[in-house]
Amino acid sequence: MDFENNSSKTDHVMTQGKSTTKSRCKIVAVDGPAASGKSSVCSAVCSKLGWNYVNTGFLYRAVAYITRQEGIDLADDSALKVLLSKFSDSLRWEPDTGKVFVGDLDITDHLYTDIAGQDASRVAKNSIVRELLLPLQRRLGTQSKYGAIVDGRDIGTVVFPDADLKVFMTASLDVRAQRRFHQLESNGQTGSQEDFDAIKASIAKRDIQDSARGEAPLKQADDALTFDTSDMNSEEAIAALVELISTKLKL
Ligand code: CDP
Image (cartoon, rainbow, N blue to C red; front, side):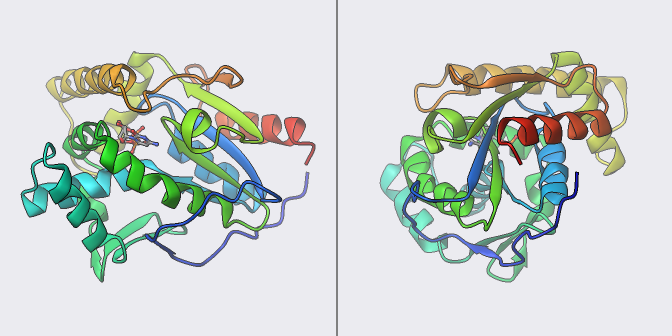
């Protein structure tokens, strides 16, 4: 199969947008629990297909970081609204590098720690935050020329319920903990058995928190295909997802 790379080089600015579900590009919704391989597999698949990759988790991580920096109480809905409108024009994600900026400040390194994941999961329970991020996620997904993979927790159930294909990417807790451990280890952030145990406990806690919340919980859409990566290395998972998308969408 021959894939041309046409992914957009444009930065995405956090502004309000509308869902344009008519005559839009192809949308593949990928949901699943933490560390199931979504971001690494989906971004590689998008490079092969020439599609845009939209990682919605970065939005929740960035909002959690800004909230913490500004000392905003998550229970204070009006302060959250003010905060999000203040930062809405300055929060920027570069799809090509995965870097996240507030204005000119690169905050990427603050977002991909274990604590940032826990913070994001807490912020993600808030209905005001979810409501304000919804149009942005739809806009990011639909601005691709050919297609986009949008990954998160509620993409197939809430953000793009009419996606062309829905995938629920999962893996066993042990495998996911190993992957996150190696990822953090390669960034010099961890290394010991206690760290591994703590990461596993943290992922398990986030699974429960994300699945049990009232607002847009993590759950497999009825029409989503299960994609279990427990026994796949990353090359195998990438090849399998390219095959699945190509077959189902007749690319
Ligand atoms: O990379 P990982 O799977 O660990 O997490 P992520 O996709 O970066 O998401 C971080 C947290 O944001 C999740 O634990 C969810 O609580 C929240 N999130 C969400 O609620 N809805 C989304 N569409 C994406 C992320």
